[in-house]
Amino acid sequence: MKDLIAGLNKVFESRIRLGIMSILIVNDSYDFNNLKETLNVTDGNLASHLKALEEKGLIRVEKHFVGRKPNTSYIITENGNLLFRQHLKALEDLINAK
Image 1 (cartoon, helix red, strand yellow):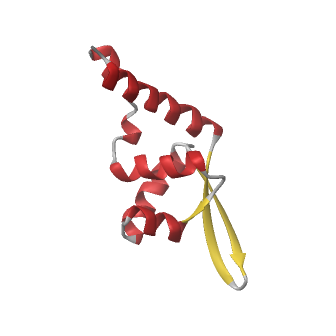
Image 2 (cartoon, helix red, strand yellow; image 1 turned 120 degrees about the vertical axis):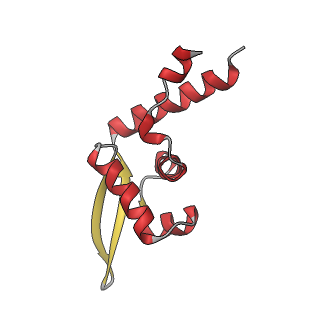
Image 3 (tube, rainbow, N blue to C red; image 1 turned 90 degrees about the vertical axis):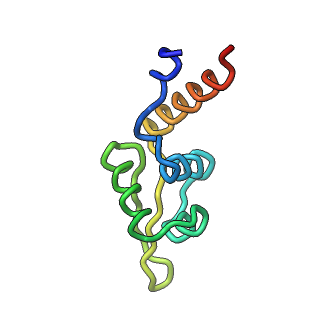
């Protein structure tokens, strides 16, 4: 059982980080407002989790304008994709352990 738990990545323990990564792994990009709405979190809470994921190199930020309004989008990095898939595999292994 210890081996199964050792495969889990502490970075993804938070419900919000798990949600962010789950959304980004299936979308090319996702903007801040849609993440906030989808995850039902405050600006500050979401921003702190996004910053932590960005600092670990798991996501990257793209800032651009839509019309005259600034828009911030997030994209999962190759390393983020790999580490998150490993985390999901460890969860599956834990769930299916007999």
